[in-house]
Amino acid sequence: MRKMAKKVSFCLAIAAFAIPPASGEWVWTPELKGFINPRKVVMETPELQLGYARQLSQDGSHDRSIQEYQRFLQGYHDSELCDRAQFGIAESFENMGKKTKASQEYFKVIANYPETSLFNDVMRKEYEIADEFYQMGMRGGSRWKIFGDNGYQSARQVYEQIVKNQPYSLRSSPYQAAEAEYRIALCHYELKEYLEAELQFQRVWEQYRDTQWGQEAFLGLADCFYRSASPSAYSQAHTQRAERAYQDFLAYFPTHERRNEAQERVAKLREQQARSEYEVGQFYGKRLQFQAAVLTYKNVIQKFPDTTWAVQAGERIRDLK
Image 1 (spheres, helix red, strand yellow):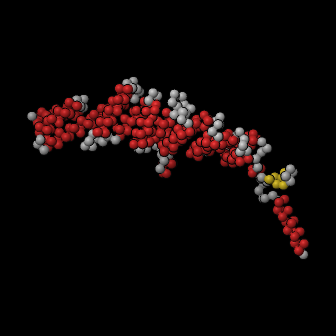
Image 2 (cartoon, rainbow, N blue to C red):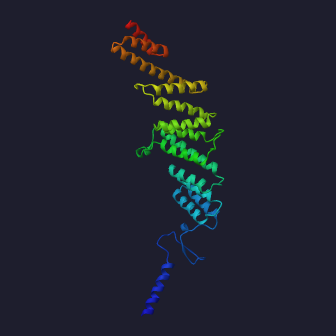
Image 3 (tube, rainbow, N blue to C red):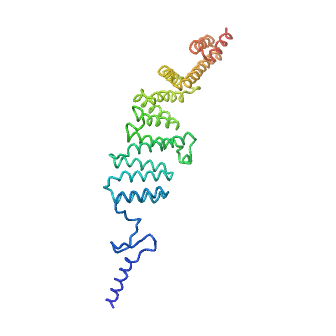
């Protein structure tokens, strides 16, 4: 009886290995004399496996292509084509619209295969993703805004990775990381992180002052000072600093395409300072300190003759006399 039971158990065990699962993906292989699942086995050569994954991606089966690329990396981890498999994973995520994940996977090409010939292709892709996030921010954000990201946050993170992975990016300026560094500052600025933006603009100006991005960074610095200048503040130190920055910009780059914008900012800041000084004169006048009021109004005329407040200060002096 015991012998019979052992025979039955042995037969059942053989049957379990011989009969494939219900899934139709299992096929019989004479070489192994058993069933295998093709989706869980790499093909005969790295080229065939890579080509299969690429074909799936071209057919729009991006989830499956990612699985096949990952299977390639597991089965042929010593192959010289591994960087291309990793690039394919990133590209598939990008085609699925998963830009953040795609960016992370693209950077793995450089991190895991530093001698890759795909370096410039990776950086080009990263720039495209970062620029797309930045454009999203300019359009007013997206569905990510509910998670605290309006596009600029993601763009900044990708630009930072570009700078980290490539001190000199593939773009054409002499100091080719300059644009990515400048865009980092812009992202901080658009996120109203003016202190961080100021520091980053300063960095770009100091390192790349002979480039287009150095010039733009100098203007960005002035813009940061402008944002911190309050018309209602008792001290106009920030306003004065902003005006000096714009004046210096106009002196350094008199033909810059944004010179009219800088001139308008200078005029507005001078109006702001003149108004603050004029209000001091009003303060003295209300307290019947007429001599101090007249001196203050004269300062307005002397220091800000090109403002509307200089005209009003002259009128007040005549009234007080």
